[in-house]
Image (cartoon, rainbow, N blue to C red):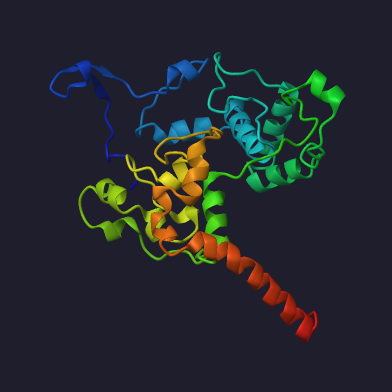
Length: 287
């Protein structure tokens, strides 16, 4: 589904209380003024979407590059230079190293907004290559590791946990699926059908291919701090609750798989496969 401009875009009236039957004064098209300090340009043609996109991605707008760089840093190192990646405003956290954030943002734009070059720069840095061992002196000065004096231990996200369990059991399907799984539920309100027969129970493709429908979260992902795909989340919550361990073995989300004994069978089969592989290498020699 996409959006395109009308042949002749027009200004829209301000509808009283949001009711289309009560149009008020006409409001001219323009930028969101609360995020623009200088006078906003006047739009004379088009809907303004293209102009807005060009302004957001302009090299003269440093906010976009800083937000993007901060999210990549957070993904790689576990905590952003701004600890509130969804909030760069007055109520958000201040950057722990503002000069570094400015430098990374500026170099990101200079390198053509290349995510690949940004990731290469970060993973080759000393900060990314630090060990996770602690140090009493550093811990006393910076207990939250705000200045990145060690690599903070990372936990697997929900998708990786599900994929790892399926792989251990020999059930993970690595080939991309063909077509849309949502279409198999038929016409109408698909979320209701998904709740009755969740796709994570009937399909063993990688979790990245699972459909996410509004109002029908997948329990195997939500339990391990997965997110609703209908909203943007800069940083996931990290919780440790009893339901997570119980669900791994006894939870309703694993009923279909537990009926086949896939978890137990997988952990039993994995050493056998490794042993057979080792024996084959010994019989035929390393190649």
